[in-house]
Length: 365
Image 1 (cartoon, rainbow, N blue to C red):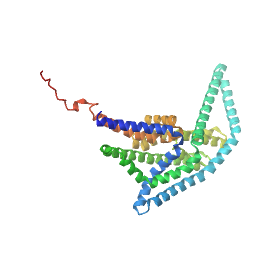
Image 2: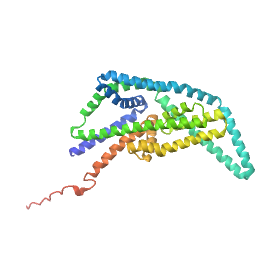
Image 3: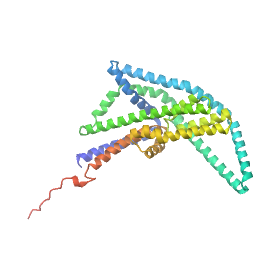
């Protein structure tokens, strides 16, 4: 076996080992994954302070403290407000159910006056079936989010362990990178560094693009829900912007909460439909304009690949998988493009570029 084949076998075996290890430890990965993400985002700021003469330890501690203080302020402002709204919503749930039953009854009575009895019966059965399926789907989503993010992954460990992990990673970031760099095969060092730089640029583009998407969505929902007349619209818009980090599940939670608050505050279908329209327009803009332009173009991923990555991440690693699906897909995309580039330069793709083998003459006996 040639040295090139040995190197390829080494990288494939290393990749498989990492995938198997991550799969076996996925139930405890959340605090470490979040700590790594926080350290990766804050590392440039720490490096800048270090170049200004501040020690690495003090710079890491200061930057992390400022970051945690900002996160704590967000939760202190939002959690009591949202908690109060949810408590009111739960208390008014029987009233909302009765109101919905009354409205559906009025609609069925109107249809009975205009349609044959058989058609009305079919419509009633279809409506009951679809409402049951929708309720089951919503309950399954909420149950999955609760069991995956709180029970299995243990939110307490996220709060306690993540800052510790982030601090040590920030403090030793350069040493860790240098340590990993020292074990890269020397003949592949330039290639690995080049691809690592591309991966880093891709992840930075994803972080910046996702932050812009969250900010734009927060401003849009705060203004739009205020125009609709929903109470606490600014705080709710800010919450929706934060939940946009969690694909699909975040907007589902925000939609359910907003529709419930609209029904609670007004008790009329008009405002509920207006809130639904606000979300429909917002998600259309996000899906067709913001995400493709601000995230997709920066990480060079097709929207279909992004959707597949979200489903695959959720299936393989639950809540953690959904969070890291898009950046992981971006990294895999970089590696696949590199592999395809090398393949097209190899003789496996076009053997005409290879030098012809010399013809051996048979010796006469």
